[in-house]
Image (cartoon, rainbow, N blue to C red; front, top):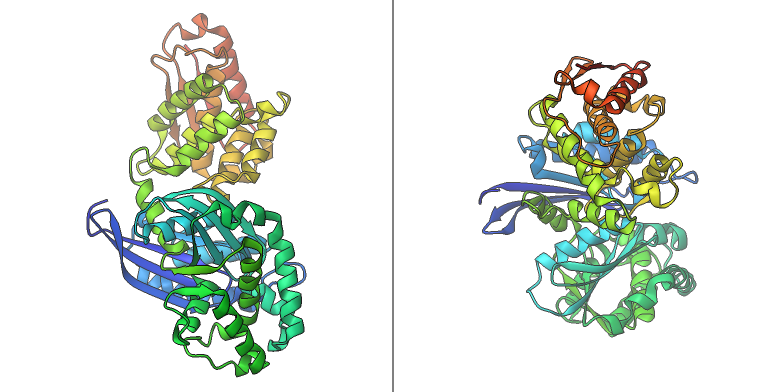
Length: 492
């Protein structure tokens, strides 16, 4: 990316949707524009964890306004990230499908650990560089993220299902702020957070930072009341707690610095902060400027740097963790990539990179069992926490791993996508030709795609020289017969 490039991040949080636009200048991203709208979807999940029609419409309306500002941005310059509410919502696909069309860019639902990693990146990029060990805490509408790290590296991440919107709805229903409600909310928050508290206790870090949302709101109120600029202390929290109890109801809370959209969820937010202070041995938290949206911007920048895409490192980590035969994976990846380059249309770089990752991971399930290892591999990827990947990206890799062998009817719906069909043709062909687990003789091999017809051609004499490989390609043609795609092996 050149200096002056504009980048944009959309954060679809449980309480608010945010749009951050930044300009790249000498390796740093400087804010150009910031918009925030209170959508509060996190409070509109029903008992079956479905978003209400009203909540979805509020989100779509907000995305339509963001879309007008993002018109003209290249796809590689925008990242839209959805967090806990859409992780939980059973009807999220409906919201995401229409929301992506309205926004004009795909919306990614990220896992809790990936959200935490992006938060840390956002905070770390806006802090002065030092070797201090950092704890970063972000209390969102339906989840709380805890991260330990140094400089730009997050060493440990956790995402807990406790947030200001959820806790306010559960323990401060109707807006009543009572001692009993705070006691119940803090006890419940400690019960959830206690599972990870030991790993994030004060002995593991030097400085604690609070990011965005609740932490920013509490810090602003305390600063306005003279409790120190950019700091949340135990004394300040005790004072704020008493002010809320005196108000007795969220509607009657009148505090300098507290915005109207934050008032209905202040009870739940403060109760979680108090629980964290008790569990983690906190004396104070410094309010940080960075947040998830800045992390998403820098993640876009890193993906443009050769060898710097964190997803490639995550793939390598999975390869090593599950004992994949790296030499075989490299052979399959090289051949699949060569075949894809012959047939893919211009602008298929992302699909080519995805195919490379899938090829490197196609035997990942073998550590569990050789029988049906492709199904085990798909399951691993669908449930993995892989830094840099959105959940949908991992599911797409899982589909390729699932489909690289066996019958294709298991992917009947997915095969309507021409890009995925071509990826599968290339991957399955490469796996077949690398069956002997050594570099195959593929001089003169060609793969072409015209409409729905895929043709694989070999040089004269190849089929006689390699009868098993020729047989496997003929079998591959039979495997595609009951799909919308024709696969022909012209073996000379």
